[in-house]
Image 1 (cartoon, one colour):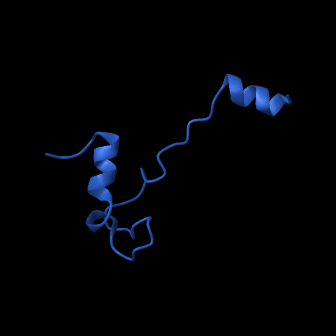
Image 2 (cartoon, rainbow, N blue to C red; image 1 turned 45 degrees about the horizontal axis):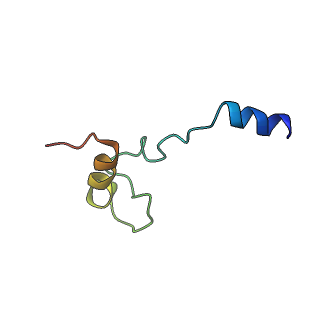
Length: 53
């Protein structure tokens, strides 16, 4: 086992939320051509647990 593999095992890398910095009025990350707020915003907020009521 190499040094990189050992470090990855000891300190696992957590992927940051790739959609966190996406603005509401930007094009959605899914490639639909719609704005994020009208496409995946609500679903992503539910996954994060920060949905508005």
